[in-house]
Image 1 (cartoon, rainbow, N blue to C red):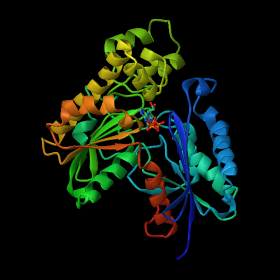
Image 2: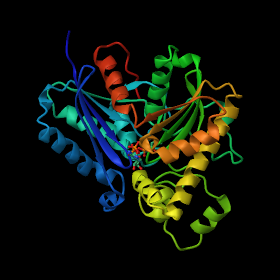
Image 3: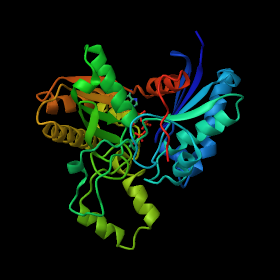
Image 4: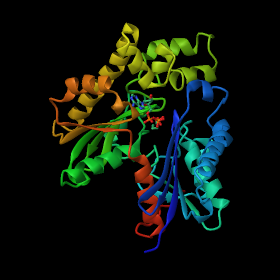
Length: 358
Ligand SMILES: Nc1ncnc2c1ncn2[C@@H]1O[C@H](COP(=O)(O)OP(=O)(O)O)[C@@H](O)[C@H]1O
Ligand SMILES: CCCC(=O)OP(=O)(O)O
């Protein structure tokens, strides 16, 4: 059997995850965490390009990985135009929109760009992205807001939400496309999706829209207060953007984007940390309840996933709020690296046709 070597790159807001697989076999995995101090010198996500690329190449050198043998580099895709779920070979149109960040700034914009750069430096590697954060399967009714020029947008952890949805179904002998699930991904950003028979028909915009606050995002804010802050003359446009995304949520309240640090403080008896962490959990529980109404109460399972699903305080708080809706399954961390590898492998084996980004 032909062995394909695949490099997987997953730049998140608080981490860079790197993996190398020979077919399905993982031969290297590294999760490099970035504190907000470390990323603070970079004004924009695009400015982090060289830093993240160097982190990746250094780790590969340190692990003595023969990169010349790589056949495919799969990067987590970013805020390009809304697209269908699937695997896309990186092309010029995709790179242009990743650079621009047509729907905004997020570390995942760098995934496809660095993947392409590394692939181009190798003898025979191709670059791909799969299930980027802009996968859009919203029902029309879920798009409409009270302001026609500001529709709701589907920007979420599509890759991991779908991967754990499939895993949940598979391990119980079902097919993902036959189930109704609610998936809460809790990472640097938080997204809560209503999966109706394999399509994410409603989800919050986890980057700079609405939904629960997260380690570094403000989530839904009182609109009037937000407008007044924008026009107060106290903040620049760039500063307001940071208040919403980057310096919001746990960072704003507690000065850290690391939920495990907050958990430690809670354990040590810090009441303010406990209140703020509880509020984040409370908002997640409420959003799960909202998705249950979208699915008209027919929910086969609720899945808690992402780095913060390691946190017992968070998991117990949310379970207590929602376990009357459906059984709760916990998948701490994510299955993104595996999901990216699977997509890359299927593309290299020509088991799927790569979609073309236009
Ligand atoms: N063992 C753990 N216990 C509690 N929180 C954790 C743990 N591991 C990671 N986290 C938290 O999860 C968050 C990052 O989740 P992750 O899914 O890796 O995010 P991202 O991909 O957005 O960088 C951070 O706030 C981190 O502190
Ligand atoms: C909107 C999905 C992207 C996101 O928020 O990812 P992180 O949690 O890695 O920041």
